[in-house]
Amino acid sequence: MFAMAGQTEPAKPPRMLWRAEAMKQLHAQAQLLAKQSIPVLISGETGTGKEALARTIHDMGGDRRPFIPIDCTGFPADLLESELFGYVKGAFTGAVGDKAGLIALAEGGTAFFDEIGDLPLYLQSKLLRLLQEGEYRPVGSCTFKRAGCRVIAAVNVNLLAEVRAGRFREDLYYRLAVAHLRIPPLRSRREDIPVLIQFFLRRMHSDLQLSAAVVNQLSAGSWPGNVRQLENCITCMVSLNCCPMLGNGEMSCDTLASIQAVQPELDQGTQLPRSDVGGKLAPESLAHYEYVAICNALRRTNGNRERASEILGIGRTTLYRKLQCYNLRTWCSTSCSKSSQSTPPCDTGGRPIRRPVCQADRVDDIPMLSCAIA
Image (cartoon, rainbow, N blue to C red; front, side, top):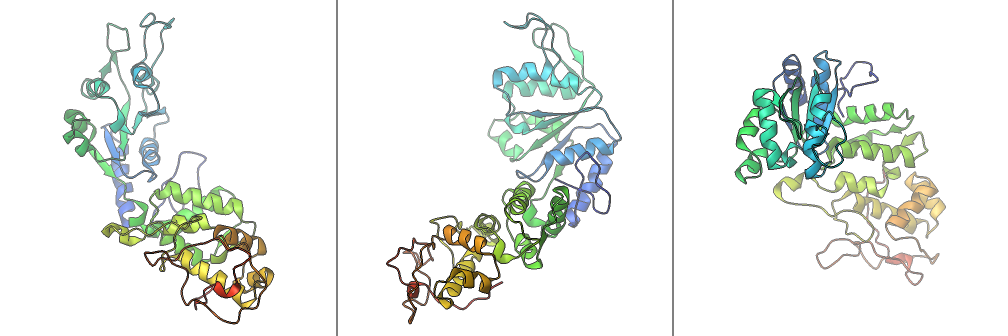
């Protein structure tokens, strides 16, 4: 999702929003292309907003004629041709009348081919003729029809690699990539994340406020699912929290997993483990420090959850949810007089693990490490 900063939000279409210089340049290129009718290829990782950019190009052209999305993976291969180009009466069993295809519906507007890399090879030649000659032939027809639509295509794979592998026509690639726009992933434009967060909160008409620490944590995430993943994360946070202000301690384990699943070291091949139930917590992960903070608070209060929640600055319900997430639900009220470990319980690789706590476990089995409690 994109939005243009500093302007009131229209009912439609999706807006463009950015702070990053790369997105500013991308928007400038989109403005130039909006007044033209040449094909445009938009590439980017999943969730970066390729369709939103295509709609923006369509609407910036001042054209109120149709924008027709075509999901190249959404139809069976044997039906895709008739859906694209239509058919005439008697073309096949069940064709009791003529039917216009999606290309005809996009007349005067834009036909947006999503995931163009998945288009079957036999249809790629027909799309090539559409781009080169501006005509197509409905299934079962002996005559060609003129096409009066603009073609914008999107792909989330390296299309040139698909060409080299023989899965995509080279001539079609160069016809599509007359203008090639590349949307950078969210992790390479982190300055856009706070603006996107506020946009999603406003669109959901939410009064939830995020602390600066939470915004910083969200901005530090890798977001492999890009803007779509961030939007889903904010939606989840709004749905599961009823407090007016959300702090670090109120963030769910799923949220923590989302923002820490892959740290910047991923670019060098290093991946940190997820913090789901039964998972392993790397010592440098956010979930590790949350786990230690909860253990410290429970140790100080001798297992009293109400007092521990006050120390942590979170509600009791939130603490119960985190105890369940970390499998720390069962505590005894035995006084802890000593610490049997100086580090969290680890696996064979030296990484802290979450383990079930049974009634036989003593509070002094919980590690006592110093850490900052947000």
